[in-house]
Image (cartoon, rainbow, N blue to C red):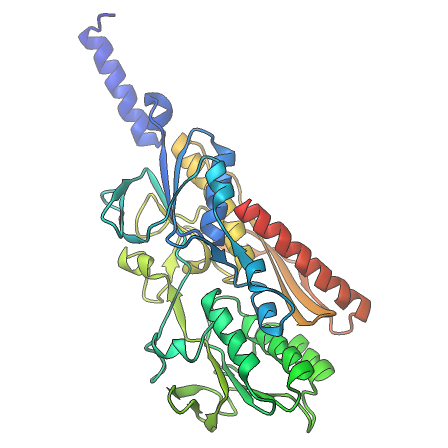
Length: 429
């Protein structure tokens, strides 16, 4: 069919308007490309929910590891209540949903060129990019503790081999040995995690090496579920008595760590120097290095985002979800990442279609297993506030009461395990 000059100009103006409004793909028939960096809870959930929202998208998930080990429930591996393989999840189900999984590390993200460079030199172009890099451990924050020292003194804050290393050290420790745990300052991944870890290790020691001791050197005077954990330590592990298996040294008592000696297996805090048979040092954290290299972080070391969509406030077209993002009052947790990924997926699809973003909401629940029949939980629901910031919904969610019955605490363990099965299926298929 012949096209005269006036018709051509109309088509050109229409295409330009479509591009300006953010949905050239529907007009021009192109297949929108979404590249996701990171195959953890946030990245894998985003991939699955993008596919559910739009079957036409070209979705690529970049993840160098063949499988992901969840940090949540990894503490049960330390107590012997769970096998390591039970927290391992692969990507076959995502591949079966027509999601292209690239087993490479992302070397760089160029927001201006809209390209992601892989470790092997390949370059992927994108129309939208979701960065879900998790955390980077600051190995230079504590003198004497670096990546090499972590091979002897595990952090186990990125689950998998590090979890196995800490588990094996606990198994090899003699009865009467000392375990020293050093949690980090806020903010960090899974705020209740170090204290659930104390419980799970104490459970193992109580039943296998009852003469042993746990010392917690803490740079804080209070922590998540503070009262519930201390109550649980008292109920199960003698906390507050002369026979306590757990000594918690707060910041006011000199708990902040200043140095680690991996060769001597000693750790120094304001309260003194402590010798350990097993040491678990969890260093300070920031956004994963790919986010740092892409200039997605601010002075805090984390990534500022538009809290309605999770689009980076530094670069349009790039979204940051999960632990790396600054998400108002939402904690850095697996459930939060899962919830953020779903909102982000909806925002990306709306952006590609030139449609308004639906009103978002989020949810988070965190279970902490104190003993095999004792679990506590905190939950919250979030919405977008009047100023475009995430706020907690007043009266929604809640915290396990300290006077909860043993039956309620026991049911919470079943709820925790059920939640784990549901969220991992929702994430990985």
